[in-house]
Image (cartoon, rainbow, N blue to C red; front, side):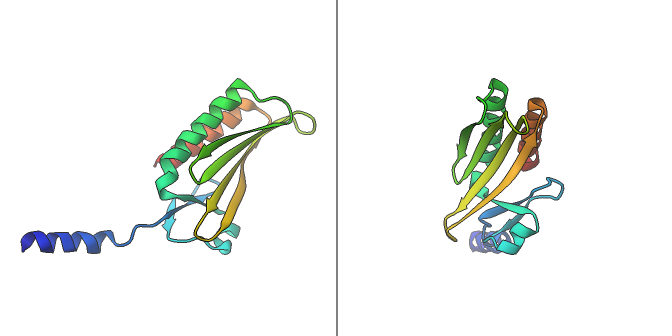
Length: 140
């Protein structure tokens, strides 16, 4: 009987697990958790990543940093997949001479894609450092 009461109390404490981690696009506010994502949250500068994908996204950010270090040909794209999230790395050598990294998450339940530019830097080292800061932010 005590075991049953203990298990029931655990269920009431844990509640329902949130499916999405909502990331502050400036990486200043702590990650929040939600079961779904609305357009006003996107406008308020949050970005969704599936909670189960967070370790893959951290690894993806680190892989993207390594790809930037190895170099990407001028005006070429490269991608790193992290389950429902994808990093898109672009090297612009004509206009701005910069590296940009976009992050795109597909929320399958709502049939929506969320996309934002995580980085646009002229210095490759600063771009790499921002990606590593992003992975550290998510790991907290």
